Image 1 (spheres, rainbow, N blue to C red):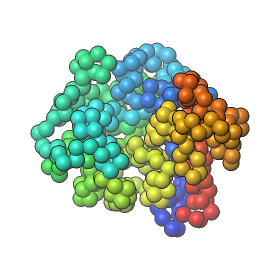
Image 2: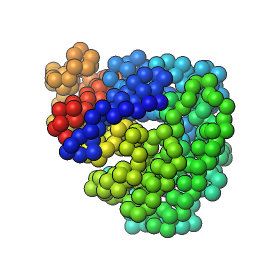
Image 3: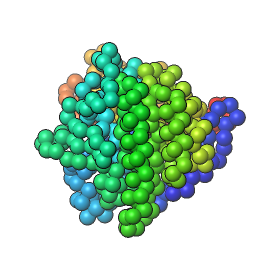
Image 4: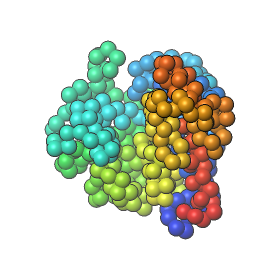
Length: 387
């Protein structure tokens, strides 16, 4: 992997770059659509490429559960398995430590304000999630498929990702909950730092992958505590990772998220790419890009599409509503995607109300195209010195 910065903004930390991998070049900043189980739900790989998607991120934990990294390895790796010719990332499984653990227990997300839950409760040192056990060596999960116990630690994560064969892989960490107190975060951070060292060592000890050299990104944690974020950023920066992920919970508001990025990014090597894990609402994009983020993954465009929601310049359209049965306009008159060129709102609403899955495909295609075009315009703003 090679990362080159083409232009730095004079107004913010925003920057234009190109990230070169064995499977092609990514213009940054870039959205990384989520292909959890080696697919962007409802779309073929060819259709996903037509949405201007440059790179996808697949889920190590879920692919380990099914079909298993062995099946994918014998199929020639993820690229051949899913017939995707462009770059790929795989996460480490660290997010599932949160999402299947305290995230599920308390019904919260990475930013508390976005996913309100039982925020009067605090996770203190020694507390364990209901369906897993977090130890110094790794995490004992209860499989969401059949309830069986399985273990995932830093070495296991790297070995799985090596067999999956993505261009960029992530170190194993604990993604923490915004409900955790400081003492919990301190212990979690020490554990994550230990795991990230092990990930580096594990990667070095593996024989050269038949898929070529995989770039390994280290993940900065530390929750919403300034000194812990800075401590983590400096530590991860010192280890020689190929790039950086910024993970964990991001506080209780967008203001907190911005502060966390402002604390973190100055301590990271300016010549290496930075990826913000799990954030990518439209209203977030300029904020995080101006803060210095190069890559970010998010399920918003696809998740909303499967619920009948289309994104347009003025906001969102709920095409489940019967009022749109009389609307002969495209989703967005100014959108150049093939859905807006060929289908009308009334038809998509009909499909939704009839329970036809084609509606989900059409909305997913449009939303991804819309999001990628939105980021494309931000890149143009950076180029022209507007942000």
